[in-house]
Every structure is written in C-alpha cells, then in structure tokens.
Image (cartoon, rainbow, N blue to C red; front, side, top):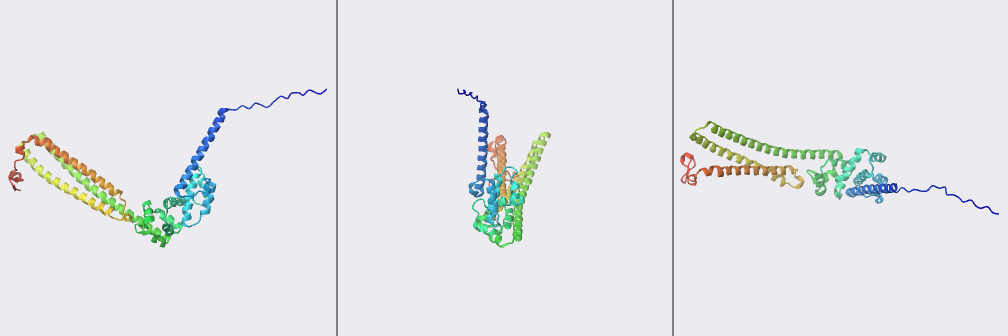
Length: 343
C-alpha cells in the first residue's frame, strides 16, 4: 500500500509592494534624466556658440578630452580648436572636475584660460583666413588678446586697427608685435584721455558760467530785499534799477555769447570725431554724452528765458497802459528818440 504524500506548505514570504516608494523612485529617475538632458543641452549650446564639433556628436567629457589632446598642435587653427574644446569641456564637467582634466592634458590653468579667450575673441563666427594666416603662431595669438573686441573686429573686417595692419602682424616678431600693441594701446588711451579732458573742460566752463549767473541772481535778490526792507524812495529805486537792468542786459548778452562759443566748440569736436573713418574713430560714447548734456542745458536755458518772459508779460506789463508802454524812449533812456538812435 503506497504512502500518501505529505502536502508541502509554501514557506516563501509574500512580496509587499510599496507603491509610494516606487513612485518616489520613478520621480527621482525622471528628475535625474531631466538634469542630464539639461546638462547635455547646455554643453551642445556652448559647442554651437564657439563652433566646436563635438566628437562623435557626444557630450561625454572623456571623448572631448581625447579630442583636445589630438588637436594640441601649435597652429592657430589648432589653438582655436583647443580653446573651443576646453570651453566646452569646462561646461561638460561637474564642479571640481575641470582642473584635474587640465592636469591630465598637461595644460596650465592660465594657459587654458588664454586658449578659451582666443576661441571666444577670434573664432566666434567666421574668422577670416587672412587673419589666421597673419597671426601664424600661438605666441602671436596670445599677444593679440590684449585688443578690445572692436579692434579685433576691425582687424578681421578691414585688415587694420589704428596703425596696426595684418601685414604688420604677419611680418613682426613676437617681441615687435608686443611693442606695437603696447604703442597702439597707449595711443588709444591718449585719444580717450584727450576727449575726456575736452569734455571735462567744457563742463567746467559751463559750471563756471552757471555759478556766475547764480551769483548775480542772488545779489539781485538780496538788493531787491534790501530795497523792500529799508523803504528806499521810489525815485531812487527807479534810478538804481534802471542801471541794474542795463548792466544785467550786458551781462546776459555776454553769457549767451559764451554759451554760443561753448556749443560751437562742442560742434567742432563732435564733427571731428564723426568725420573720421570708422577704423580711426575714437570711442564715441563720450561725444554722444556731451551732445546730450548740451541739449539738456539748452532746454534748461530756454526754460529759464521762458520764465523770465512770463514774469514780464504777467507781472510788469499789466501795470502799465499800452499807450504809455509803446511811446518812444526819451533821450535820457539812452534808447530811441523818434526814428533816431541815441546813445
């Protein structure tokens, strides 16, 4: 008689799924994927900006580093490519990883910085073949980094910036180029200082004029206050004020002549600046600011004249009848007697 098999019991524990933990895991993976996608997009955007061809269309730092090592020759085109690659490598690396990779490449951090500066300054866009050929070497390329962006653009587009030409860059030694660039920088600074000094002198002349006008106005107000306080007889006040108005008219004429001369001087300076060829033209920001300042002061002067006219029209004229106001001046007035001008 056969044995009846003993039923086997399932001793494996039941699997309990934590839906909340699973959801959190999925969210974390999604967030990580988003971060990696944004990071990759930033790397590709910078590569496109500096014109760097990503190796195998990949943003992996290891591949970029190997590509840089392959391009580390000393021609200008290779310097541009090294600079582009370093800029993109820096963007691709996590914080603290860039310097160790520079050590692996055998590039000092300061040299890497100059490579990247060259990539942004000279190869952001279509650098002319003539410029690249004229530079010729890494040493000259690094010397040219002292140029301002507008000077670099002039050199690329016109073949000259200031007195420095592409032929000069090509024929000079590194030492000669360094001296020429220092001279060009000093000349540019001297022109800017000269323009600033002219601007400063014009402003000082204007300030002196305005201070003189304010001083005369204050004295006139003080004199008027004294007349009102001490009750000077009307005849005496009339005589004094008649002299004052003649003197004030002469001073106002002199002040306006000075304003006109200052504006003419500004016109000459601005015309001289903007009549120059663009490659020989100093920084125009100071000239524009000077014209704007002169325009503002002109409006202020016109406004002051308008206020004076309003006082005459609204306060003085109503006190005198029209028939008296428009009678010819007498000889004592020193103006016009009939049709005859008298002094």
